[in-house]
Every structure is written in C-alpha cells, then in structure tokens.
Image (cartoon, rainbow, N blue to C red; front, side):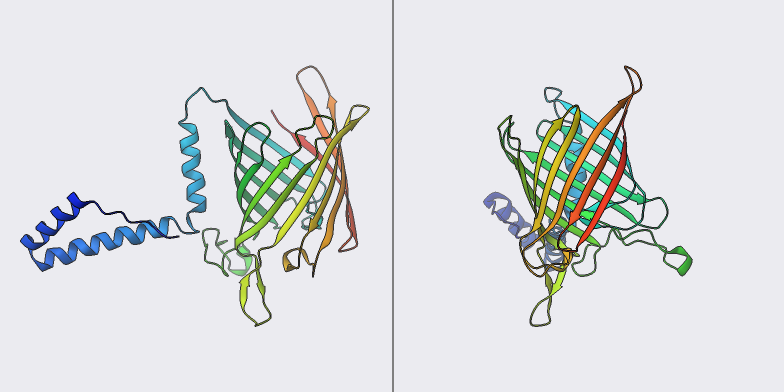
Length: 294
C-alpha cells in the first residue's frame, strides 16, 4: 500500500534550520528516526494489519454514541457434520460458536468450528457493512482452518499470527451480498473472492500465484406450515483448486428446514435439518443441528 506524503513548509523549514545547527550526526539520527516511522506505517497498512484493523474497529464501535443501536450476538450450533459450500470438512460432529457485535450498519463477527472427536479447528473473523436498509452488504473476512497443533509430534504452535503469502494459513476473502427488496420474493445473491493468503495455485509457467478463488451463492427463504425453509444454490465461476473444479461448476445445492421446539414461554430450542448435494464432487450430506442461544 502506498503512503501519501504531504509537505508542510513550516515544519520542513524548521527542521532544516535545526539540522544545520546541530550538525551531521544529529541530522543522521533524525533522518533515521523518520525512516523508521515511515517503515512502521507501511508495516501497519500491510496485509498483516487486517486483524489489527478489525480490533481497532471493535474499539471504535464500543465508543460510538448511544444514538445508534448496539447489539451482541451469542449462540452456538451443534451439528452432526460440518459441510461448507457443499464440501465436507471432516471432523464428524462439531460445535460451532458465534460471537458478534453490531452498531448501526456495521458488524464484527467471530465464528468457529471445533470437532468433538478430531483435531479439526477453525476460526473466521468477519467485518461487514450494509449500505442502507435495502442496500448491499460488503464484507472482509479471514478464514483460518489449520486445526489444532499436534503436540504429540512436537508441534507446539499453530502459526496463527503468520501472514506471509504462501506460508500463512489464513484465507483473506471479500464478499458482496444483496437481497432483493421484494417482500414476497426475498432472493439473495452473494459473491465471495479470496484475494490474499493461503489461496494459491500453480500457473502454466510453474509459478506459485494467488488463485483468487470465487464462490457465488443464491438463497431463497420461505416457510411451509410453520417450518422455516431455505433453498440454496452455490457455484464456482471458474477454475480453482480451492473447490476442486477445473471450470464453472455447481458445488452446493441445499434445502434447510428449521423449527423451534417451545418448552415454555421463555425457552425454545431451534433444531434444523439440511440436505446438501454437490454435483461437482457427486457427493451428498444430511446434517442435523441444534442452536443454543440466550
């Protein structure tokens, strides 16, 4: 990222006079300090700062005026298996917690998945902004699923804070989603592209390059006799190793049904079943889940 430097005549003139007075030694030290500050700024605005930027945004959101509605989201899903965009992620049954905070049209969300029987572990951080009540939603996320370190074989760290391209386990992804402002036809469409991080491919020249893997998804929610349903169609627009495709392919056809079991006026337990088909991999899944929330 380029940093724009603007001149300030007053400060530049004063600095020049001081350098002439104190001599070349002090001038060198002053120049060295300035260069260090510039390098620090460049480092801050690099890809490594995405997580830091999310943290700063969270602090800023907590300090916003009470005039804007602030809301926390705390919930956890227990699922019989973890399937993402039509692809089985392994690990059998998994617990998937969500922690979110929103203020106005801006939101920060931490989502994770931990296998109950294996070492599979994932954590995704997402910052999103919705443009108006009926506008699109822009999001930036880091997806990390390197799993738990194998301590038995001498692995003591997971390298979560390693961000160098080609070495990091993070997949940095940008998304744009839009829901039609039609009450009787609330179709939504979303496009996601991984723009940095571990999403790599080998090109025709044998070079290791960013793959820019993309995924497009259509969702249509509706209800039948008190059961909330959602139909999904997900596809990959072009070749990418991330989704095991060599061209355009439909990878996710799903139908999800959700129903809350009411125990009393204060407590209900939502359960869901989702049937998923992946035509590209010729695979199918039937997932059962329970949602826990305060």
